[in-house]
Length: 113
Image (cartoon, rainbow, N blue to C red; front, side, top):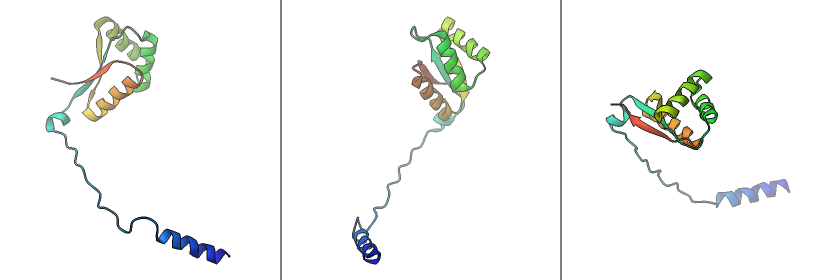
């Protein structure tokens, strides 16, 4: 009984699916030298919605800042309307901006210069 089951299963799988595989399409995503130049900066902007303690906590979680540094940036945002939280390679800066958006903070990516 087991032998016929195995043969039956093989026969079903042998005839299943396409016999050829399509060649995958390769898409190239290139960035200009300007996009790759350093540095890019992550800027957070003031908003009237989030509590100062919440903003401080987000800076600690996203950037790993100690409480004192996170509070300094939070106060800079509160008093000046914006604070540059980080600068460096564009790809990482984009990730930080996305993370800040995930916490519902208004953040942008800006090229230095």
